[in-house]
Length: 106
Length: 122
Image 1 (cartoon, rainbow over the protein chains, first blue to last red):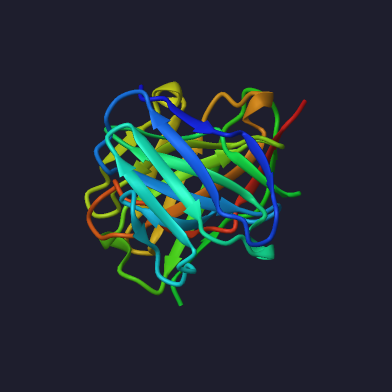
Image 2 (image 1 turned 30 degrees about the vertical axis):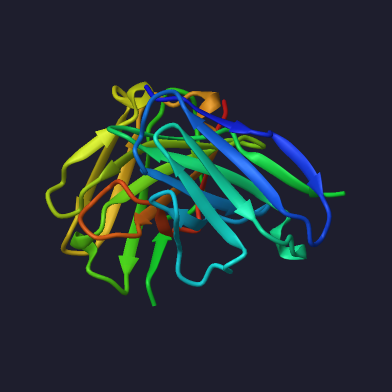
């Protein structure tokens, strides 16, 4: 089974900050990676798929990069609505999620 | 509009079975894979498996291989997930979710059901 290691597990940031979250796969997954945002009491929301494709309707301050084993989600300028938990998900022969990154207000 | 509507909350005793439904509307049901994901109280997301609504083909996470069955009924655009031999640690919100691209299970999921809360308690 492929393991996804997401870091950091939590971070605090301010409005306007640039934030980067990383996911590392235990073996190569090519570009089969998605990123989600989840707020309390809500289902996850797709932000990025195939590592770098921005889902329709998602603000352009979100971007994804990487391939193989290392991937990043970047928020270029944090907005109040961005404080949430973020998850990566791989799609190898099976699938699985990272443990999540809780993004809080500094 | 495109949506997935899941069945209502359930309370089960340990050792029982549960079956959650996921009714699709607003898009061609057989064109998009559906994944099932669960989230325990205060926990992260856990992938359980997927079903191809066109062929009925499935893939299950290894830890659920012997307890989970995913099926579909194309006549009513509905996917189902059954979990047997329930334990207290199966208490969770169960989500179905549609893959964003047609005919592949390997992209992200863009449409999610509202979630079904399952409580396992004696």
